[in-house]
Image 1 (spheres, rainbow, N blue to C red):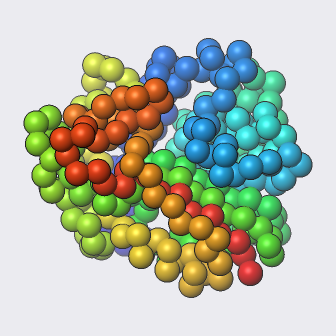
Image 2 (tube, helix red, strand yellow; image 1 turned 90 degrees about the horizontal axis):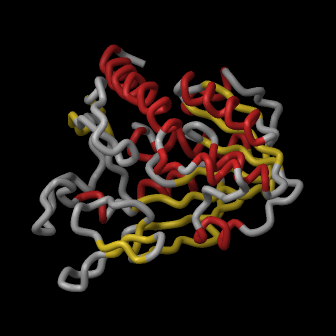
Length: 273
């Protein structure tokens, strides 16, 4: 990393270290429900991923491990990775509280080979929702996925759609473009005093950097890393209030009928050839 990259990384890490503790305490994550047996996985992920019983699963950007341990509850042998020491400490705490087995590793996933044994290989590499914008390099990301997948192993991602991410996420009255769709090595920057899951509590580390990645960036990076795309799917809903005027229907949020319907979530499944 050069000095600029360090600045981006350190700023984001300071924010996520703080959020890791705040999110672990917050009722929106429903840790109580999880400890009583509820899954934190969305219906879409469960349906498309299928049976994971007995599979070795690597979860990239796992935060404090609730999704990782939800896969463990379904029979997977799980390893979760996150760059926040506080997130991983809370993941280990959650594993103990839930009496579920999981291995958790502190690492920037771009440097994962330095922190997770390269001899390890996995049946499944999984990542989900709100992950790609924190990464500057899709090629390196895809190479890490390929490196840890067994031959014939499966990669799966569910993520907010790049198309939906171009729109103003603060204006409550109108749908209008605000952010770039295409990748720029220089990230966007914003300061946000709260988070999607902590209500009105104030965050000290307000700054964050993020990158835009097009659909073609993502798919071509996976193909170039030796993965075969099994499916790419788009959906008109998302599982969090990405834009202030989205309408909640059950677990999902949709664009109001007065607006054009755009893709809000995409999923990809790929296999290592």
